[in-house]
Image (tube, rainbow, N blue to C red; front, side, top):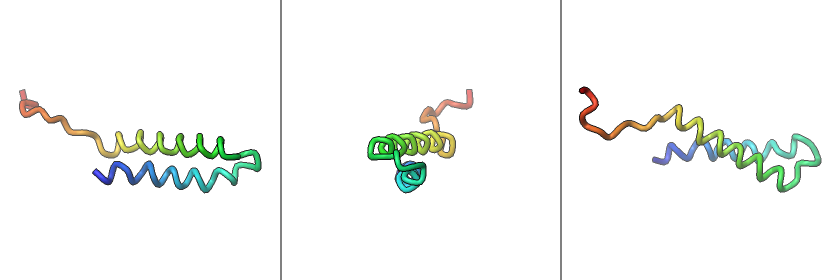
Length: 61
């Protein structure tokens, strides 16, 4: 379960520290949106890296 939070948090931290490198106009709002985009990309990547397994028992029919 904890593995689902690792990638979004890492991408959020990377986005937070790289936001000021984009330019001086990257204020708080731009940083917030970049962190939100980093979290979204992390969640999307988690869906591909850790796909959910179906819980049905009769998959072999």
